[in-house]
Image (cartoon, rainbow, N blue to C red; front, top):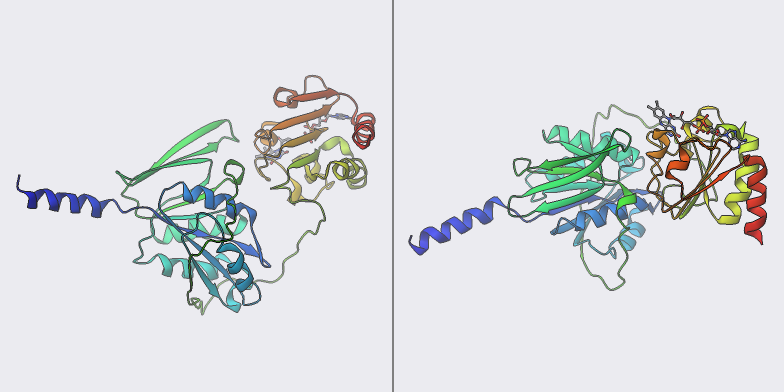
Length: 344
Ligand code: FAD
């Protein structure tokens, strides 16, 4: 073979395997960066290539958010787009911007936290580009030589792990990241990266109008990222008993409060507190399940917690199969005693 042939072969190989370049949607609400975005950034960094962040919002919040996130370890550049159009972050208004950024670009991956917004935004843009979107991945591996990315994600309420490989035939690979499986990216004070403003994309005939947002306000730690969680189930009787029993325990531990779906459906707790398959997935240092049976749908949301403590009066309750510490007792007797001991 002549050297010229070999060189052209190498060039072709290089051209067909672009190094990864992820675009990560760094979600912010009222100037606060979603903590799940920091874990998504860690996952994006594991692709082994460049990572560009995207911050979108109004002039009231974007400058402060940009100042903060440009120090995020793992980001190689940052884009931001500012417009009143993005005051309410709707998939209908954000997707044209993402489509424009991706069109003809070198991005190989689009990454986000699996927030309510991203659950609608990423599949919407992926569908427009006729590529798949993989949700709530728990691990990833990128093979640069074949330009394929392999993900794992839990299915059947966490009872099986599915492995999905997106090959080089998928030019842009979309995925959301389960925050409990990746440490949040840290901040590096001295980091200098390229920061660039991009024009918003107008949506003249937006089919959706934002009417109102009702936010649940709480002084407690955010359930999704709290280091300690105290959750209650059906035997907490009603909203008053639920709060009167669990809040003092959560207070003494500095914990967030969670709930089973039975407790949420019965109106004892707000549905933002639901833990499980159709609620939040948490993996705190300490998870206390108070009067929760341990149905698989509940376990799907908390079984990766580092230490699980269960209080249940039924010794055969399934929660004891995953608990590190189990107390067979009536919760109304046990919880006040636990609080007393903790105070001591
Ligand atoms: P129960 O199952 O009624 O259990 C109550 C427990 O409290 C029992 O074990 C009992 O022994 C114990 N107990 C009673 N009195 C006392 C007492 N005085 N002291 C101590 N212990 C006591 N559930 C979720 O939690 N999260 C989800 O995201 C979720 N998603 C679902 C999705 C689907 C598609 C379906 C079908 C179900 C889902 N569920 C979910 C519901 C789930 O199957 C269970 O019904 C629910 O978790 C039960 O809640 P619980 O443990 O509070 O109530």
